Length: 480
Image (cartoon, rainbow, N blue to C red; front, side):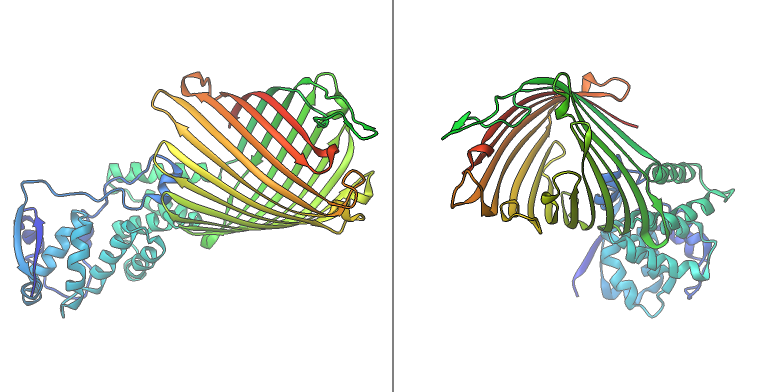
């Protein structure tokens, strides 16, 4: 039998707590009276979800080290129980992992203590759903075990069952004997749930200079054709987004979204562009997944006139594989209608995969891959398959500077030829590079200024669709 090594804080204290109590299958309220975990309020909502093992308290160097075999523990149930309780009180996750399998084998094992230890262990291992089940077993027979109730609330919170977690925390707040530090933690979790469910309002305003607002071809002539000259102008873009999460039982939620985007030019107002979108998300979430279904409707005005409207629906799956790696897969179907140029009416299928790699706390890599299928147009030359890949490298430097470098490449292959491609089907390629710069010290009252430089090239075997855009943006962003 291999010996086990573990550290105990002079077992005398724990022995004194349990010496008067026989080993049986009843729960003792005092067993868990000092069992509150250390604060596990995390720095941000993202960390709450991903860093499941952030707090594993260690014993001090003064603790005595004992060597004992698992069989010796099984032969001494009183000592085994004392060890189990001590490890739980000290939140020694490594110790619980080693001792719990031995304790389960004991004929004198208390099933409530087993469930409690399993719940603590599962919670710190990032298995909040299983942890909640373990604590709920105890609460069914002992609904007033406040420490168990606290852990149960934590497990539901991390499993994104916010409705039940809010109820659990409300019940805990009613207890007059709740320790002050735990009461403070409960209040903090209430604030986090309120933050998750409050209205979110985001505004972005940009001043820009565009050297080719009409997408004029780089070459002004092709055969006997002469194309429009490039037009340059200053302008502003504005974005506004409003949303709110309404939490429901079992991790379900509803979330309406309202979005506006517009581009306003100083002189060439017949190129003004306005887009609005309304959507309603139906979703089911747990600690590592969000499954959503989102019907939506969009309206576009171009040149200050009605241009098109879109009806569609999108299904998506967000999964956190690791606290540094997440993916979002979505599939959308939409029908686009044009007010004047009705021959452009079409159906679209859009496949999208986004991967987020948090390489370090300061470096993040975002990879987006998209496939678009446009069909059911009147003319074959307006139907196509397209794909694109975009990478974003975001860095927060030690001096407060924030940078984002974006690179994009894509292709569209059309089903038919145009007048300028003659007998060949149209093929397009697109390239883009963008640099964004911002600095923490330039924030004021929550407003974050940012400067963006963008280069976009569109190449095609149709001379009309080969053009280049160079833009400079000065952005101001605010989240309410």
